[in-house]
Length: 308
Ligand code: GLV
Image (cartoon, rainbow, N blue to C red; front, side):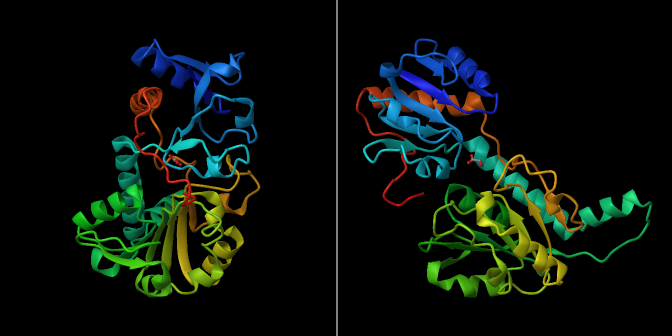
């Protein structure tokens, strides 16, 4: 009975250290090192190379190291009988609330414009927005979306939420799937926190941007493939959108030739809106591993029939 860690970005040792310090009795292996395949019952993964799960006949559960599970669904070797879990972690939630809030204020106070003025030694006060001028629309009202919506509403922002099924959240006006247009026409800061599924792939495109009021801003913190990059650039260049903060990309690291790098109204960050902390996440993985071993229901289990 053992856990296999699969990630390819050189950070596996931090995760193994967290297991060693919290539960040294649990056998854990790095996929890149030799390991006894028949002992593996749980795989803890982050953007794993596809096609590996078939090699593990005793595998019972695939656990994501983060909140997102899209890269597990996309893996053809994820068998139907396997269990899947995601991370629901207070640190990840706070990270996301703070990051989106910081981007909303940066947009509202025009901070990025001032940074660009600084690079040409330009001393110039610009008019800026106030809370009454802003309606934040959050697409995706899962754990991160709902928490972020509440954090912004508590600060006095007008916040709307859109999700597959209508959610009841105090202080937030919510819309369900078919009411997307109603939601968009009232939103002028659009935050994407959707899960990536075949339905949401490419959803941030020209026809969607055109339904937002003129001068809207995009904060994209979900997954790269939600966004059609050329459509965003076109909507900014033709003056309909005023800009965007983008944290996630279809190819990460972002190609140095990507036009986002140079665009004056696009601010990019390297997928850092919320970052899983191995120490914090490993604690819940250990709980789930013990539950798996004793045939108890898992925490934060993904309903694989829903696809996200
Ligand atoms: C980050 O992108 C995550 O899914 O946790």
